[in-house]
Image 1 (tube, helix red, strand yellow):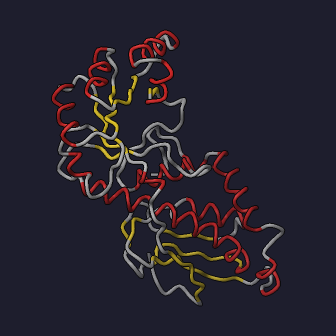
Image 2 (cartoon, helix red, strand yellow; image 1 turned 90 degrees about the vertical axis):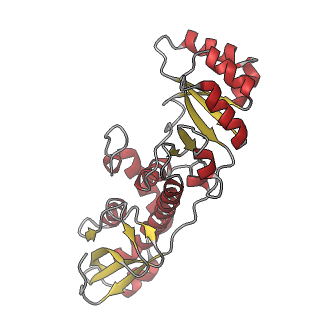
Image 3 (cartoon, one colour; image 1 turned 90 degrees about the horizontal axis):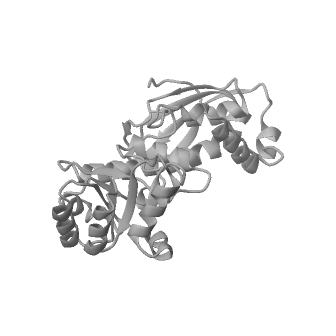
Length: 293
């Protein structure tokens, strides 16, 4: 699960490590003046991460240990696998190392795990809501700056599928491209003229007339943007599997199943990453490990 759709291990990515170092510097400043005053560097401690509500665990297997060991490589970590459902009160990460270093890394590790668990859990709820229909649940680029690689990882943990990671990963002609170019046809022609070996082109459509124009331009993916279920059903009938259909805009847990039932191939949801509530997780210092994972 630590690898992306192309098999790349994101937790070995030097860019991620640089970002984590920056996050640690932001939180530590010139050092934890409270912990350093109370605890000697040699004092060893033990701690656990506890779920305070039901959730899909995300970040404890790879990310949290990376944060703690960037503070002190001597910290020992034992975690349950990411992507696992945990229940309120369940312990899913055990830590052992210098007390002052455990406390110094606590906040960043918790912030990230809480954020990612929220995304994974919300994604899993959307995936469950469309159970029985073939539509895939996909994310978007509406992510927290600096956290995209991690937030898209959390989407995968929840059973979702990643849309393009950045603007260089795929061609998506959106409404503003169309408005500035003058038409879908013109925009597609310009893309094909510029990219001699172009990948599938995706076009955002708001009307059936635009869907027809996109079909005539032989695009691979048509995004049905903010269409009503009735209009989406008509678009599905019109397209007849000649292009992949993606529903987008205004999707929530109340209407996602109805959207899936329209016959679209995938549903992209910005809320997976921009509106997922963080999950309640705490770190507790303990006297001994009397639990096993």
